[in-house]
Image (cartoon, helix red, strand yellow):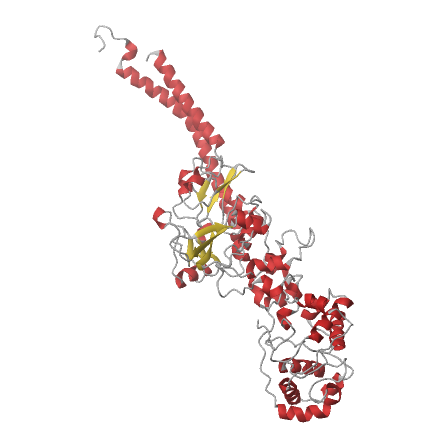
Length: 281
Length: 331
């Protein structure tokens, strides 16, 4: 489009390209130094934590944790729920739970289960406090065809949708299989709460961050069981290393026909259930 | 190159450079250590101290309790389920000992749809009325020996022995002639055997019974228990002004779970009280209360009884008919 007789020297292609090259070279030189410095710093720091982990004698790459729930054993005593709150500083009210227990009751002649959990107002009334939990005997004397309790918690999925949606890298899956939340990095956007198909996450208004079950990561890295597993009086909860063939969870999976919740979502949960019904999801 | 293009390029480069430096500065050092997250946060989470310490922690000081607990059916219920998390104990004080056991125990043992059949469950109101569970059950060893072996004694042999040794006080037919010594006729043989064995071993002491039972062999004890258990209890209703039987009836609700509604329990482990001698009942209850007769359950239930309560209860049971035709409510 430009007229041939009017040809400003600065628009000469060769000059333009060489100009670009000159600018680029200067920028590279300036930034290169900074980038190299930063890189060196990252590398130096990367060595340090590995040593620290080794000192703690816990190596995440040597474990692959898994959790089992035997709903045929659960008595609905809710000791797990109270222990979890105490162990993990979960807000002491009837709205925030890292783990919870649902009750499924099929009354005679009814097609669908009646479902309630410890936070149901009737059950809170039975306990008399939002800090203590008990299931009210609300189906006493009714014709119950089938009833059972289902403990729930974060499934620590192999393909966690919550991790995928986090915009700041505040939630992640560790090498040993736990899905954790970095409370220092969480910006409280609650995308992950929406993304979780199991409702396992909640927003902690006190700390302004998302929170959820960690399988008591601070306990399992010290060789203890998660608090809920520890206090369960009927061993309805099982925890262990999937990589160890003789661990409780490996035996649980090997000796039972286990299933996971909502397999169709493709999240591949790592909490395995025995004795639940098709309506449980 | 025209100046404005150059300026633009320098600006872009400057911004890019600033961005890169800012990113390097603001990104936590451990951010890409393991992936798109802060590697240090794992350690941060793992550094938290556990609140629940497990029984391995408790056993160091509470070895005796631990031994009893771990040998009994509650061994799957760890200490901290009932006593709370042990974090900070003993430095920060004692852990709670739950007092409202009726409330605590019912968390697991209240009969409720949905609980597995293998879980021991009771209808609280029928099982214990308003009593606390610990009155009868030791939470560290909750099972009460319910199964009672049948007494394999020979009543005929027992009669021979009994007439010689016991009849002078307890009557030829097991019906005591005075108010202080108990009737034996129709009593559960297993209970009689248990008591005689306790006198013999010295676990229970009595100025008369101790020396007498020392002379008995185990076979004698079984024979005597069978003999007196086989006799028919027949007593005239003993009315007395010593206690208020109506008040005693109200109190007896607390006894009914073990001893039956009118004291005619069908459970062979525990004695029948119906038609028993009034003074004997008073003395026995007072002995339990004072710890002279040793029984953890009776010690628990008698602890709260006043002398009047005891008199009332004794009056109620002494009044009841011990005729076996009256069917005791089976547990």
